[in-house]
Amino acid sequence: MVNIENLHKKFNKNVVLNGIDLNISEGGIFAILGPNGSGKTTLIKSILGMVIPNKGTINVLGENIKNNSGYRHKIDYLPQIANFPNNLKVKELIKMIKDLRGHTNEDQRLIELFTLQPFLDKKLGNLSGGTKQKVNLVLTFMFDSPLIILDEPTTGLDPISLIRLKDLIQTEKTKGKTILITSHIMSFVEEVSDEIVFLLEGQIYFRGSITALKNKTDQPDFEHAIASILT
Amino acid sequence: MLKILKYSFFDLMRSRWSYVYFAFYLLLGIVLLFLNNDLSKAIITLMNVIIMLVPLIGTIFGVMYYYNSKEFTELLLAQPLKRSSIFLGQYLGVAISLSMSLILGLGIPFIVYGLFKSNAIWDFSLLLITGTFLTLIFTALAFNIALTNENKIKGFGYAILLWLFLAIIYDGLFLMSLILFEDYPLDKLSLIGTMLNPIDLSRTLILLKLDISALLGYTGAVFKKFFGTNFGLIISFIMLTVWVVLPVLRIIFKSKKKDF
Image (cartoon, rainbow over all chains, first blue to last red; front, side, top):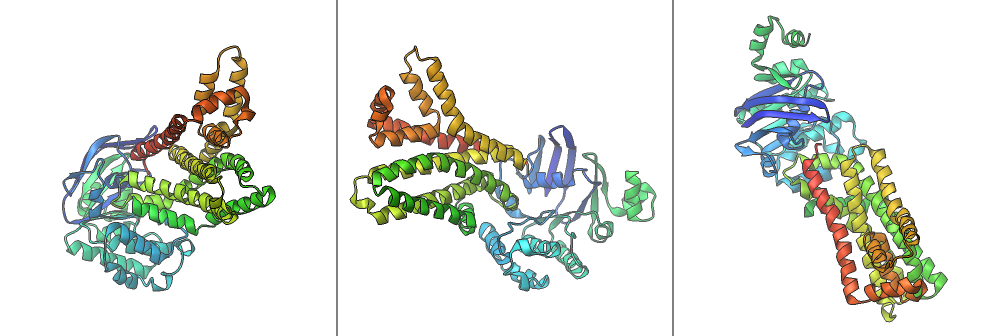
């Protein structure tokens, strides 16, 4: 599904990714974890082609992503901070993205799911952080792409929406999709992910199931297992 | 690209600033016509305003739009769109909406005044064409500056500096070099010097079309011989086009290598 070979990226002198090799097979939920500044977002943005790597190749669904934009039709991406053009209405933004990516009817169902109807005519600049994140989720899930990338999907969500999000992720998984998630909420990661990839100082420190990590670090629960890597 | 252009254009059309800019030109046109009571004279005064103002507004607006639409750009970058079409679309959206404000703002009062019945129509069209060129050039330069500088304050600083240089400092340096080398024949040098600055080029182009080149003395005669002919006119427009194309190419080149 996603094939990364020897990926290097530095911003000025700051080395963020230092030789990442990662092969993500089709189907399942993968969590990318790591402390702040470990390169999670850079890795995700490299897959999306927003960050241009210094070295290395990335293949998504067998296509080399260098100087390519068409492959993004097969990716649904949820950006970390929902920064939208402030003077646009929610309705207009959804219409615009549909215009750019293609037709879909899923948006109606998702708007109902997250009870966004009262906000459709409001400008994005006037929405609260949580509501923006819900709009963000609608934009991400309304297309039916085989690869879904979620960068901190839980930010600002209330408990009900969080439950809905978890259900949504599980439904997409049963359709055989590949889902990449980054999050700092360990309980969320433990609940949803099949496999974790732990980044440390620009390299993959650990890859495997949560049980394997617990065994490796000899810690009974997941949160402490992660903490023991970092100390 | 056309879809991005459409969204950028309508986004700007809805913003207050396009209207302010449009209203300013409308007012300027009306006041000048009212005060001068003569089309040709109004055109000369307008030229002096346009030559300075259009580049300034183009640079400031270009830089401002780029920084303000950062979120929009990031949203677009994750969509299946080519980078070149995202940035060219935005650039054209800004440049076209600014040009529209200029053309409509000045065109309406002049047409109402009876432009089509007078023989100043060619001078006036030339004024609008060079104004549009200047908008295209300076918006493209502004996008270049904004693409290279992540820091907003720096970007604005460079943009203002660029305008100041091309609009004022360049002329000063040019004049000084003419005085310094006055013992040598300077016809060619001053011709080339004028060609290399889009603001000077536009000014000369309009001045000579307006038949007031006698005011310029001997150099004026040389200039008239060059710019007054069709050949000179074509070369001038080629130069203005080059001034548009080069920065636009750099926008494409730079945007391909940038991280977001």
